[in-house]
Length: 336
Image (cartoon, rainbow, N blue to C red; front, side):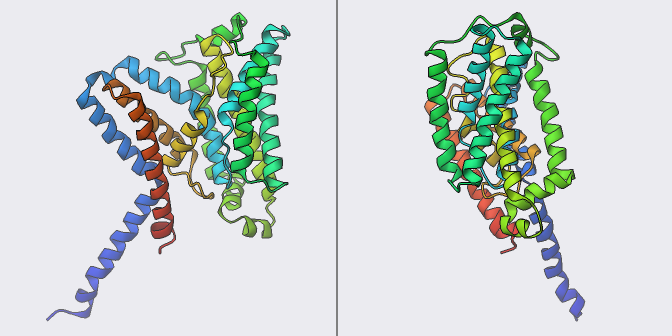
């Protein structure tokens, strides 16, 4: 005859398994890493050249540019906002810096600081308008996207800005390891620092609190407005840095720098488990998400898929990632 303990054991086991499963799925990076590993194997089986040294280097180089912006976008999303103008900010900062180098003949250090200043100033403007004036981030940053694109044409006259000083060409042509240069080194260092700050410091906890529940955070004494505006400044400055790295890589201030980056960055970080609703996600997850997105795009190119289908694939992945985020918050994290 079965005892009461024997009868109740299976439900407890199932509950324990469910808790472990919930904990596993709630970690966004885990699922993305697993999916990316499967995709890498899939593309490699279809075309072994996918894992060639040249292709891996190309993926990592592209990731280093958009990944720098993804770090800032992750911080901003965790704080409960987002920025659609990052691509235009990257391009505008790059061409302004290039113009200061050529037309104004200013020292390289001054022009780089000027480019970063442009990005930070736009981030500050976005933050103040969104937080202080209450204009939705979608409207403000979408408007800034078009303003930035227009200003790029005004500054450049529609033509690339060149020739740039030799110091800039040296930065763009540097080979630190495996054919990767200063942009990748900066990306790795920035990602480690930002991930540590978000996970391990009071500043990071306050950012999570701001995005998770702004009213509660304000009641416990957190200056939520300052954190949100600060996050806008960070993403603006990092966008500028990314744009100038591309400028150095190209050897000119091209008018197409940053074009289309805004959706790529948001799609990547969302794929990496960073919530569009604020208060959840990590820099590590955002970086992994960007890497996975670039693996998909590169894999489709290598196996010869039409470029139109590549865009469709990115859109489908983003929708699926947002859907997973909603499910995770509703059924796993919230315990519904």
